[in-house]
Length: 365
Image (cartoon, rainbow, N blue to C red; front, side, top):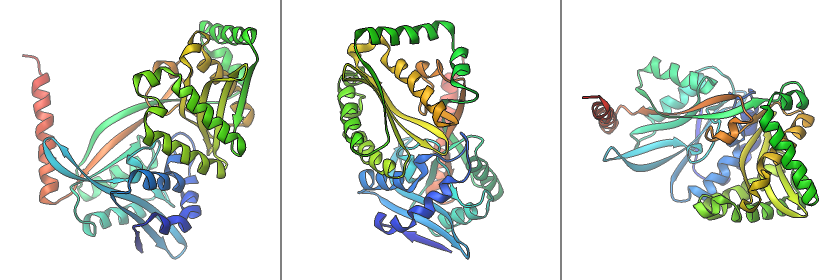
């Protein structure tokens, strides 16, 4: 049976069961904290007030079998208006996917049939999945079975590494020059003043940590470039609200580096299903010569080993500084499924024409 909810408040009672479904599966291919009810609730409240949002809830005789929160928006694509249906997590997420109780096709098949037969007013369905995950495999199989056109729009590679063995083994495997830089920077900091590493999980310390995050962001290179957390009010409000919700669930883990009482670097992270998720991090530009971000990460990773965390997920792009620590990557791909309506077919033809034109332009003369 499918139920449809249109208000965030109506979904609150579903929160515990929703998160139980998200908790299924493990490892880097499993769903992460950005699939939880708290994450979707925060996005819904702060970013979707003016959008049409529906939460499809599938239930059977044993209880909740699956959840699909979706919203509709109109954008111009290839010069034409397109009505795009997407999971709420398309606004901002990481390792998301289909929230279903069983890894089989049944529940997702029901959701897709509902979208194609019972949900009107959309031309394309867009979603981002981790390649090789259960969700990725399910979508490919069901689209092939029902003859739905599935197109990959974009892909992003994100670094991660497993915390196997011991901290000493991991650290000794890092490049020799990089290890020397880390220890040398730590030594110079301790010679300059009192170096303090703090971990924050909630309570009164969370307020202090978030104040330190704001101070560091305002003193970072990102502030000058206009990409800092404090330069984007939507981002700042979202991460502030989610930090409190995540701390209530025991997921939040912030790390802070202070020099003589001055906050100089931070990591805004979560531990979820044994994976540390590095959401945001930065350092004060005035302390760049001391490599505060790398020193903080060194101290943080050592503590993650002690905590028994299994994997460090850098999230986002495979930037050079991340690759100094990580030796593996996973791929997040954004897919488009076209509706079988006239507008859906028109969108597919327009996309095909755009690809042919781009290919012709790139072809050498």
